[in-house]
Image (tube, rainbow, N blue to C red):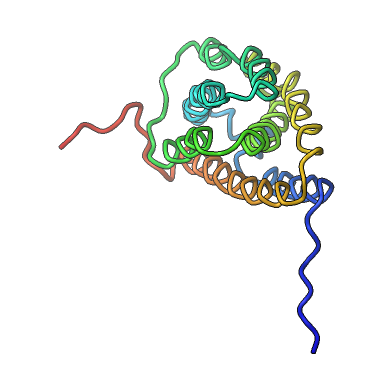
Length: 225
């Protein structure tokens, strides 16, 4: 009687290939098309986009501070601190580009960003590394690459040029630590990265809805009833 054969354990190469496929799918999201199809030429839509992006820029600071606060392993702590130092104040750069710092308040945007913050308190260091660098920074690098020229034309170049310059290097920070992991850890990291891509896709899809006017954004949380 034959017995079922277990699938082969995933490798680092499997993880990178899967993540690359997820990134390519992410690139097709509506929000990225807005940089090149004229949507953001509309001042009101552009400001809604910036107000949505300001939410993530602010929360990304919290993600990195939370990751640092919950890391007791100096092998990761030094890497995390280097990244934190390079990212501090990027939300202020976006606000300076805009000339304002108000944000859209939206439950989907808040929930998606809160998920990433919560992962920095409960996951292990290698999972945190993968989520921040191979998901969030990979998305940021793509946004920086495609947005720099249109944003320069619209007078909001500093934040986007910065991400075009630094996010690729931030992606590579995760490569060697993850490459050294055993197959069982690789398998666990792949699951968490899949979840992270789904949460990030939820965020950017909601941004597209708000920018195109299908949602009802407000600049502050609703008053209690």
